[in-house]
Image (cartoon, rainbow, N blue to C red; front, side, top):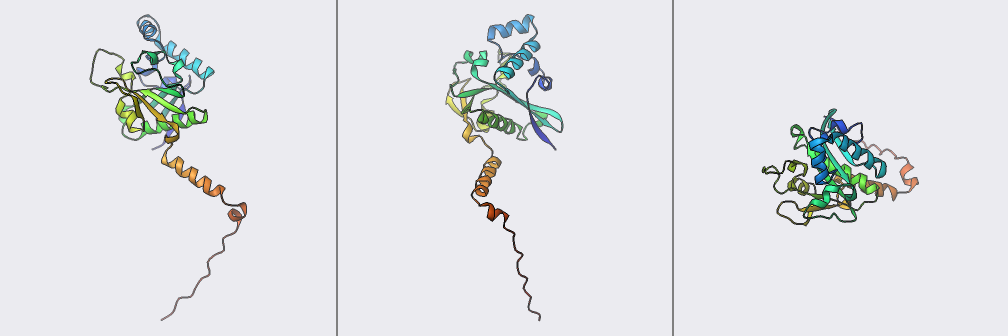
Length: 222
């Protein structure tokens, strides 16, 4: 089974699962989003948002593929690019953080670690860009069913807690959570870093010195 991450672009936007590829819950303020869904074309609005964010800020999403099939995605951006973020009772997002807007793993691929893989991909990207942390609004009542038709656009609190986020502002429905990027790297990355440090502390002469074969010893014949 092969797994890979790619950046969200206008070319890969169509690989988002339905209805996510047509959803503008995060990209527009509540009034504009409702208007776009009622009389406009939310798919075009989402495409315009992705295009503008890519041009002005850079990568704003990751998609996971398993054996070539779209299996999950995350979207993220500075809170200034996410009008919906100010509508939450636990806003605003901290000034040093990017907002992880939403995360989704296709049901048939759930339970295989793709969620953690996606979040770690975001963490590596944002670390290179000088961002200190990721924050997110979680849904403490995800899946319970209510009048909020877009409740699925906010990922469950349990998902964020399972991948290392900590609650920074509690709320009975929409707590705000935070992941410090210095703690978001996988154990593999930590091992690679330690190995790099070890090799860096060795002199070139040590690294290039030929290894002499051990001298063979004769066994005692009985």
